Length: 233
Image (cartoon, rainbow, N blue to C red; front, top):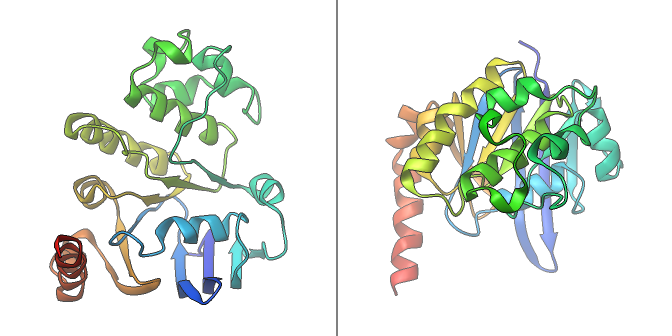
């Protein structure tokens, strides 16, 4: 199957620090791919790069067309959407209205249903629980009908139950035809919901495969244990 998204040799440097180092990544239509790694591995920086928010070296393409040189809004129009770790909703609009202003065709009912937001569709953002705010933020990106949706830490601030509920909803986005790149520190969320998982450490890909393959990979175990030991020290 032809990839809907491809990255080749994507690298990002801040001064003398190489935050992302030659990352290759392919995502197929309808695929849910997890991108994990220890703190500082380069996960969010990779999303920032491919969505046009930081300068990078390498090649990024969507549906076979290069995105290099395009600003973030142009990439979004081509079908590359993202969420942010901090959800910023329009506080004077209801959940339905927040989605409607971003909708490509004005229809948002499918997204409200898909993300289990129908019961709070007419609520104001300040009336929402954190888990509902997170889902509303995802919905606002999804109504633009992107080819690829990059989710940056959607489970941050959620408890285990709420994260599990989110994990049960995410495959429905991929099943609807939108490819998803999921970055999150919640390993349970990523490993339980993704078709494929890519692992970064110090900006480089150290492993990739099915959740079962990644879970048992010695390089992945060593990377996480090594960072945990360094933090303890």
